[in-house]
Amino acid sequence: MTIAPQKPWSAEQFLSWLNTQEARFEYDGIQPVAMTGGNARHNRIMTNIHAALRARLRGTKCSFYGPDLGVQTIGEVVRFPDALVTCTKFPGTDRLAPGVVVIFEVLSPTSGQTDRITKVGEYARIPSMRRYVIVESRFAGLLVLHRDRADDPWIATALSALDTLQIPELSLAIPVTEFYEDIAFEGVPSIEE
Image (cartoon, rainbow, N blue to C red; front, side, top):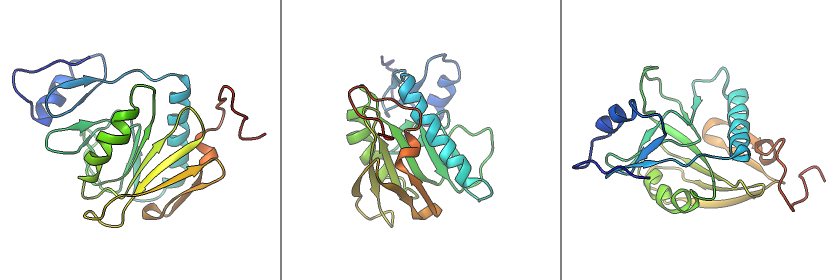
């Protein structure tokens, strides 16, 4: 569902409008776009990501957020990733995170094209971004896009349930299986088998 404003809004106008809405939206730079609801598996994976980040970032200068804190990408585009990490301090009343270093997006049947194509280009335009982690929800696997500097192209790495996600920017290592704790995939042997 989209709601077209008379003319494109600024990110600030979008966020002001968003405060009056019950549904969740992102802003594609032209119009608000309704965010589809996730299912129980999507929610569990997102919760597992948050738990893994919280445990490892406690006591550091970096913090994780999501999915209610947004990030401004290209121009006025505003996205709300499932999880993001920033090491920049900012007011607790802000709706947009500055200095985002890592973003996690959990794929859903309706978000795959946007997460795998559109957001790859958008997140590359954030100078502080070093790692974009696309998390599968149909099986245990990650696609990790990373770079050393803002002007470097993304380098893609695929990880399976047997691998560990390395996030050297934050001095973190997280086994991929941790993101899939308590998840059952139909027709796929469990990670423990």
